[in-house]
Image 1 (spheres, rainbow, N blue to C red):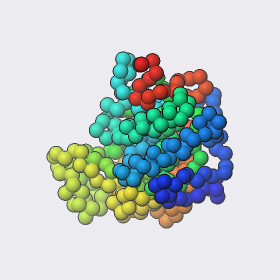
Image 2 (image 1 turned 45 degrees about the vertical axis):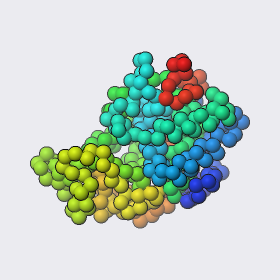
Image 3 (image 1 turned 135 degrees about the vertical axis):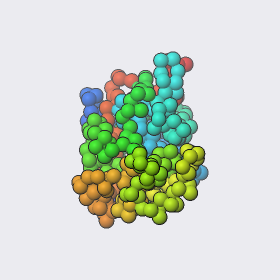
Image 4 (image 1 turned 135 degrees about the horizontal axis):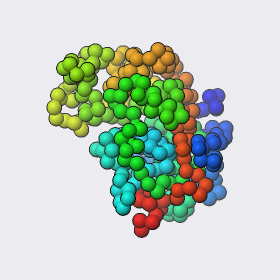
Length: 337
């Protein structure tokens, strides 16, 4: 796969280039298979439709690719890659959108609905919302300059959500290294996946409330985090005051905030990781530190592993076969009509 990956920076209207290698993936715990050609006959234009709408959104809002990547991540870590994150509260469903990691933070829901509407017009009740999330995450990576990969497809959509799972299973900015690694291992992901997938923070923003502790009171003693570059910290304090401004945004990668590259890892080596959960990859574990150094020096190695880890993450407990459903509208289950 490494040799076949093409690292592309595509124009907003260009189509995704695919590796010729078929990534047929066993879906963990489901008894079914995901494979890139799943919609070749039932909805041959599916991938083109997703890519075109993602490209249009990126042209209008350069923050959107990072938001779409995050939606896929936050979906897969809760009950598997089943689009549960997209459900609104209704009846017995308490939406994951209300969880601490997602409230006032997760975005891109309207764009997913726009993609779903276009696909329903093209091929009704065929393409799942879970597959839309996986495709949009890949397209978001490519359109910002990152690697491409074939997305194994065939997921179906959940009929329920898990607010507690969203609160407990998604790694938090101030979790310890071991806690974050444990949350990854619970999903069948390892330390290499943790470091490479964290590299998605090469694009996007974070809210002041997610990193304020590092600026003012990292250890509960009223002192800032000493593993944060102090000049960088002074810049951040202007954007994130001691109180108020919780929703103020700062770039996760201040060097190239809208370009998917390896500057995220270079930042960690200079102690300019925005979140504690970023910087600890360099400061708290020898193996992860060596991976950070490798990816900082070798962007191709990062891109190769990121693509592999995204496929692996996308295979977390998907619903296949007759399990779940193909939602007609992503924010609600079908029987809600």
